Image 1 (cartoon, rainbow, N blue to C red):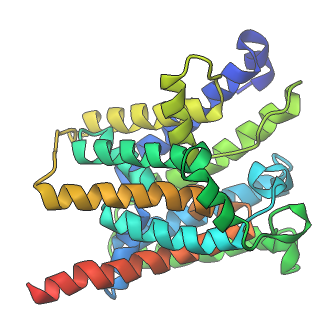
Image 2 (image 1 turned 45 degrees about the vertical axis):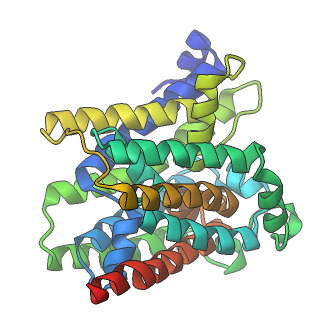
Length: 352
C-alpha cells in the first residue's frame, strides 16, 4: 500500500482510519475462523489441559512476536516509537488491572476482542456485554472512574518516563525477541499437532497475530510521512471501543486509527461468519447468566483500562514490542482468569 498517495488523496487522519479498517478486517476474519480467545485458553489450561484453545492462543501470541520483531530487524518499524513504549508504564496497573480483567473475561465468557467478534456473528449476549465494556472503559478513561484508575496506576510506575523495554533490560541481542517468538511458535505447533488441529485453523490463528504486525508497521509508516504527530499503535480494544462509542455520540470527534479498527473487525467477522454459514442470533438464557456477563464486562472495561490494554492490546500487541508492563499484565490476566474459573465454575460443577 502506498501510504503517501493515500495521505495526499484523503488526508492524514482519514488515512489513519483506513489503515485501522484494513487491520481490523484482517483481525476480524482471522479471529472468527480460528476461534481465538484468551479466556478459552486460560480456562482450558486451568483445568489441566493443553488443548486446541491453548494452541491457537499460543500460535497467535508467537506469530505477533515473530512478525513484529522481524519487522524491527528489517527496519520496517522501531518499537521504541510505539505509543505504549513512549509513555511511563504502570506496574501496579498491570497487576491489579490484569487480575480484574482476567476475572471479568471468565465471567463474561469471552475477552473483549472475542466479544466483538461474536457480536458480529449475531451473538446478542456479546453485543450487550460489549456495549457495557465500552461504556465502563470510557468511564475509566475520562469519566467518573478515571480518578480511581489514575490513583491505582500511579502507585508504582516505570522509571525514566518510559515503559520498560524487556529486550534492553535483559540485554537481549537485536534478534532476541525474534528468536523468542520462534520458540513459542514451535511450542504452539507441537501442541497443535497433538490435538490434530487442521492447517486452515492454524493459518487463521497466525493471521490474528499477523494483523497486530500489520497495524504496527502501517501506523509507523504513516507517522513517518505525516506532518502532524500520529500515534504508532496497533490492535487493542479497550481504548478503541470507548473511542468508537464516543465518535458515534459526539459530532466533534475526529477520525483516527481506532475509529477504523472496530468497524473493520465487525465487517471482517460478519463477512466470515456469513460465508461459513455460522451467523445466527443468540440471546441470554436467563437472569443469572445475564447478570454474570454484564458484571464481567464491566470488570473488563475498568481492568483493561487500568492494565494499559486488554487481552489483545496488552496480551498480544504490547508483548510483541517487549513492553514490560504488557508482559506483567498478561501474566496477571492468566492468574485472574484461572483463579476465577477455579473459584466459580469448577466449584459450581463439583457441587452440581
